[in-house]
Amino acid sequence: MKKGYKILIGLAIVGALYFAFRQVKKKGFLLKGDDLANNNIFVDYVDDDIVFTDANDNEVGEYESTGRNMQFPLYNTGSPYTAYDNVAKLQTYLVYANPDLDLAIDGMYGDETEAAVMSEVTNIGAWGYEGDDYDYSEVTQEYYDGVVLPDFNLLLNN
Image 1: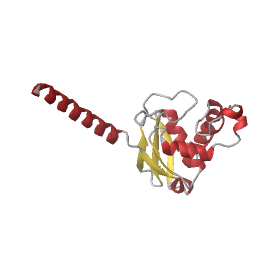
Image 2: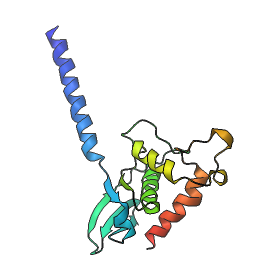
Image 3: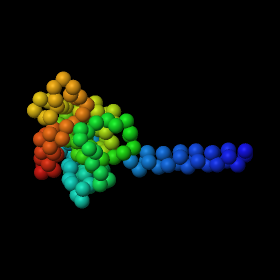
C-alpha cells in the first residue's frame, strides 16, 4: 500500500513540474498597443518567428513558431497550453488594430484574445459569418485572409 502512495505522489510531482515548465516556456511577449502605434516597437517575421525590436534594433521579444496552425474558425478552445502560429499573427494584428490594447503574443487563443476579437470584428456579413448563428468570438478564414493577414503584412513593411 505504501508503495502505491509513493508512486502516486511521484506522479503528482512530475505532473506539477511539467505544468510549471509549460507555463514558463510558453509565456509570450506582452505587446502594448501604444508602443506599436508610436513606433517604439517594430515587428519582423524571421524564419516563421515573429520578432519584436525597439527603435535601436534591439530584440525585445519574440514569438517562436510552433509549426502548427489552428483550423478555422479560430476560437477559444479552452485549452490554454496549445500555441498556434496563425493565432500569434492574429494577436499581433489585434494590437496593431487597437492601440489601447495590451496583449500577450503567445499563440494561445484564450480569454484575452477572445475579448479582443469580440471588440474588433466588424462588418461580419462580408467575412464568412453566416446568418443569425455567427459568433463574434470566432475568426473565420475569410476574415483572417481578408483583414488579418493584409494588416499583419502591412505592419511588417512599416
